[in-house]
Amino acid sequence: MRKMEIKSAEQAVEEDAKWLITFNDLMTLLMVFFVLLFSMSSLDVKKLKTFQFALQSALGILEEGQNMGVGVTEPSPIPETSNQEEVVLEEGEEVTTTEEEIKDSIKALDSEPEIGVSYTKEGVVITLENTILFESAIADINPRAFAVLDKIAKIIKKTSKPIRIEGHTDDDPIHTETFPSNWELSTARAVNVVKYFVEAGKIPSQRLSAVGYGEAKPLFPNDTPEHKAGNRRVEIVLMMEEER
Image (cartoon, rainbow, N blue to C red):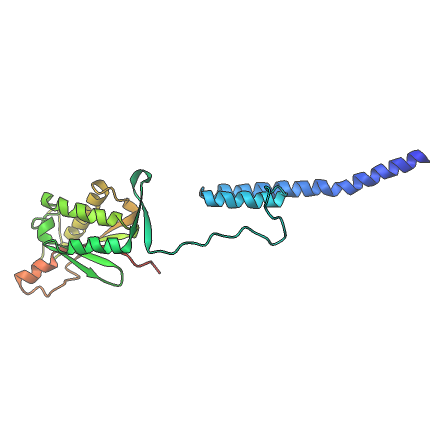
């Protein structure tokens, strides 16, 4: 009789402990699930710490001083608000630039001859007269324009916003073997400016785009040589406004 009572007690203990096996299996599956989710995301130190804290909380392994109460989480740091923008340059170099510094650089650029600066809803438009960049009916950049483009490249590096390069011509038709129309000429000029910014200015290509408008967007009527010269231009659009 005594042996039967001992055996019944052991069976009861084993049956009571069965839920621990299920609980351990569930915790293991949850851990694997979170590890998989984390492995598919980009590696980030803050995310790593958050994930570590959540996993330790689920498993009941908290460091000394941490609260394991239900619904209690670590307070999130209050983000600092400023008008500063962190820009990552080549080889991991970081520079923090304020909007005021960018505007000052653009203002200084506006004083350069054959360069104009205007402001639109998209952002800042830097206009380069055609005479500073290209010879007539040519898309290759004039070497004397390199210094100007280098100054603009430094300004572009101070912001992480997208940049659009636009090529424009007057309405005089062009029919050459290389450029059958003003569309091809204006596009080729915009592309060559983009290539210069990428190769010489070391600006990431994903930030840049090129478009050729030909004579479709004149600044002036094409009725005088002066107006035609003003329509032959390259515009560099710094899209400072956030995309909606």
